Image (cartoon, rainbow, N blue to C red; front, side, top):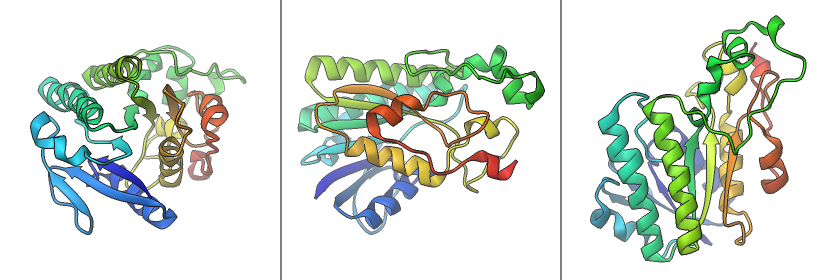
Length: 250
């Protein structure tokens, strides 16, 4: 049984991943959450408090770090949750001897490209102006949108440091748009839709990736006709094969 701690399990993706891993079998799950999570081990604490969260990491093999402030412009919220909180998660994992942290990064790390063509045309649905071959944004590019996007770049960079300095395996997943209704909510999301099934697949593949995979960054999106976030890299490294597509809803 692989012992997996999930931060922010009460959120949409946390709940989806919990059910997926429970159905898959082979995982002993626990939660670090500000609100109670019923039915499994849960430490209620705020990731801004390092001392309070340390016990949740003891004896764990992998941490999936989903807890975050999602507001694009709330500096205080991003500072406490996404800057200080992410540092505390890495530090608590290091101190407890955790082997891997799967960091929930965001497509907002490169969303600034949507200010430029052809990505602006894609986001606005001007598909007749988009070239036949869409230049793909790769995992080694950054152009954050908002304080939130910049905070996720920080989380990726800090993960690189913890991997290099402390031998902690850190896999960053730039998660695209996961919605409660499991479908795109706007024209823009036709390009960046990520289904419930696909987000769970890539997170599970990161949990189970070979132990010698020390650090990497992966885009996570479904198989969308107008997608511009490179999926070849997660396919080659993780075997990620998206099963769903926004095209079903267009």
